[in-house]
Image (tube, rainbow, N blue to C red; front, side):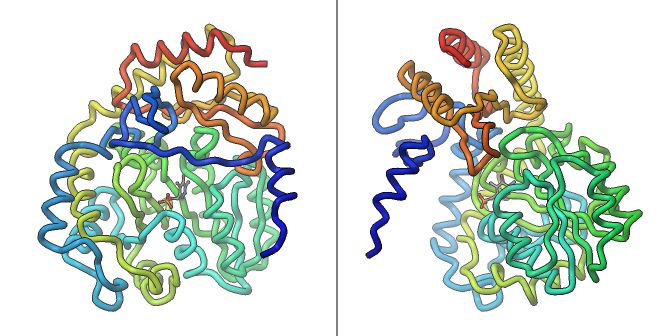
Amino acid sequence: MWDLRDELARREAAGLYRRRRTVDGPQGPVLSVDDRALLTFCSNDYLGLAGHPAVIAAFQRAAADYGVGSGAAHLVAGHMRPHHALEEELAAFTGYPRTLLFSTGYMANLGAVAGLLGAGDAVFEDRLNHASLLDAGLLSRARFTRFAHGDVAALAQDLAASKGRRKLVVTDGVFSMDGDIAPLAVLAETCRAQGAALMVDDAHGLGVIGAAGRGSLEVHGLGAQHVPMLVGTLGKGFGTFGAFVAGEEDVIETLIQQARSYIFTTAMPPAVAEATRVSLRLVQQEGWRREKLQTLIARFRAGAAQLGLPLMDSSTPIQPILIGDPQHALAMSAALEARGILVSAIRPPTVPEGTARLRVTLSATHSEAQVDCLLDVLNELPVS
Ligand SMILES: *Cc1c(COP(=O)(O)O)cnc(C)c1O
């Protein structure tokens, strides 16, 4: 093999080395990490559904009924009754004519963008979009333009100047590393005025924000008529695994014909779909989980402001503390861990240079006392 040692060493010296931890047991506020119990603020299981007894029971029942593997791609023999039922229920929940399941959010984004766009088209993306959306834009071979974060005026100029055949604007609903919500109402209006389509990836919004859990669109009072394509992931607020694209009939049919990350991969295990049907029901029936989250978010922000911590402008469960230097962010994360608290340090290239941060995420399963504990420990650490 090639000599990769130098590159790895350089990465390590720059504080950019990534390491995995081994977790035992289900997601929850306290995780067993490398055999040590840690109070955890870095899971995307925002509603506490990943280990919910009813979700687990549905998974087990369906494994008994359908087996574990789906055995084939959706277009071959892998599209099972649970997949189909989940697609219909997700359409009803999101208010779109149809949805299409993908095996992961990464694949949903690749398929949605590259399945609809090609050479001669144009794609416009917020600079802070999730890596999978940026990769999707590159993969599509459409002309690729990035606009400054949330800068709709700049986007409008780019759109007006574009000669693309089809124009697609792509944005995160809730930005995954910042926690802010995209200015969707203005984006939708700009797209309408410029004859562009809008696609929103609401991986961190669906189920989690909006009174009914319909995410960033609900927060902005928008629906399918304003945002023709919506991507949702199932591994975060829904607590299971997989993803879907929602859109009108012809969009979904086109993806079935052309999205390579849909066609050339094995369908998700049917038991995952059955478990997700139950978590979707819980998302809709148990609004208290979202209310609890909002209480915890307010408590954390008030406490952190009192301590003078550099919070970002976020009303969602993603509450980053801006640190700047990657080594310092790592040191803070290590100091928290030494005191029994797990918060991940997010460093470039995941976030722009100079904006390394501690990414605190809250879950409905945290108690107020646990949030206070995090604040107490943060108070003992030097932030800058
Ligand atoms: C996590 C995430 C994805 C990827 O979803 P997976 O199901 O984990 O592959 C896509 N988009 C955004 C904004 C995300 O945060």
